[in-house]
Length: 177
View 1 (tube, rainbow, N blue to C red):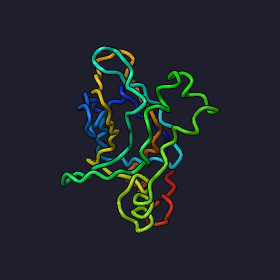
View 2 (view 1 turned 120 degrees about the vertical axis):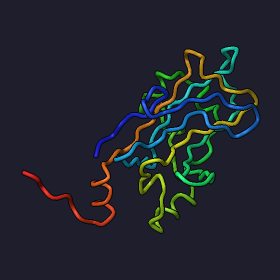
View 3 (view 1 turned 135 degrees about the vertical axis):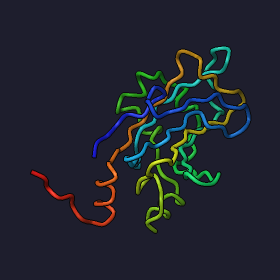
View 4 (view 1 turned 90 degrees about the vertical axis):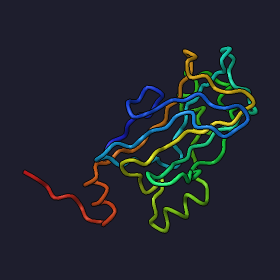
């Protein structure tokens, strides 16, 4: 188990322009075979997004983290909806400062917590291969990912399938040697 920083340049992330005035996926992480991704409650999100003119999104835009299973089109919102204003008011460098992260934490909504408590798939329990973790944006203007300053990042706990199954069953992994 290790922590990896998921960003707009992470190898399994696809970045896409958004559509104005509609919830649109800005970035999708397709979980690769043999790995399981979890996001911890209270993980900070760093985000800077711009429209085609290079103007930063307005504070009236909204953002949330969600996920989608490998089959079907259902998207589950996992984190609370955050107003983009909390990202627009501060530079990306200052967003990395632990003293300023309090309002930009990915915190799970009650539905995601309930899924985890029931032992169902969730960002809390871990998503396996072919699931997607998606960063959604809705604002009055569309995000243009070709803008040089577009960026986001957050940390995810990454497990192997074996680590995930051991944790799920409550058994430890055998020590090889």
